[in-house]
Image (tube, rainbow, N blue to C red):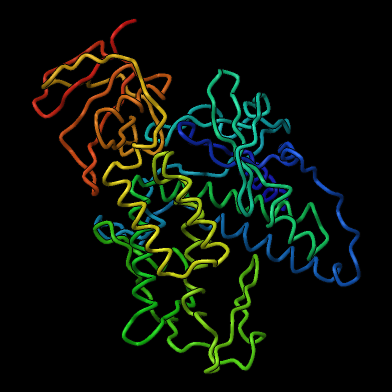
Length: 447
């Protein structure tokens, strides 16, 4: 048990992916209250609540075990066939999120210490570095977590996520169980799960994954058999085939809608919350199969992937999709329509029309050349050892380079993504420029 607690504490201190996002920290009591909202006192447990403590402990244990299951490395069933890889096996093999042991003297250094190994997603920060952040500004919040803009000791501005003390997730848990500390642990495990999934699902085309999932849900909702629900809806039941998400296990698929005599018979139950749907005049729960699939897509995929899958100008649209699917205010049809709309804006570059970023920096163009070294890591990147991103046009490449403090040059390749966007390497300098007929180098002019 002591080793398990040490592993949990070490995992809670993990934070990583310093680039466009610094993802997921668990440090109990480290989150400042949201503006105008202070954490309230824990309600005194009633006898009924005391009996529910066992259920809360069961949920915490189940979520912890889920995090551990997702974080384990090792070969997966998709190995040997790169075009068919299980979703949880997208990340490269290696140390991954291996659990660390506490030091013998009982100290608490940052975990993991220092930069990750070669091929890792980027610099990793320990808890010690995050205790010294400054200038915290509240940005926004969702169902479980709040986001703050902070500055690291070196001056870099990053986004920091933490459990939202005033959020719906923690509040509803405290009202049900009357155990603020336990409810905080349950919500923090959810953030840790997001961290693990982002590491294991690290894939630059997560928008493509979510879009193909939306199309799959639409097909299930309008299948020739009627609306089909997947009772065993988990990431392990899906594979990627040429970038498209496919379901592999239909043993637990269910076609018939749930019969009812009133809306009391139409309760959708999930670990975090329940929904009550309408009972139709024909005696069927309206859209229960479709809504079950949609909420599972939200809790297993959308909430972890969509916020990190597009340029900043598109993120408000993606946040609205995440929130609507989490509250079941939209159906599958509207969710898919919104995902398709985001894809159109992303593919056409129309999202750049509202961009307020404009750079006056000048770049010298060197055709038929590249910079073989001078890489740095960023996230999300198509290359494990460097910063390789997709852009719509040259102006966006300049904006990206200007937004990265270490960027001094970039190399436009002749490769494109599934949406036709150009792939560009961003570099820290240009001390060595070599010929390459398939690339064009742009170097920032001195000044």
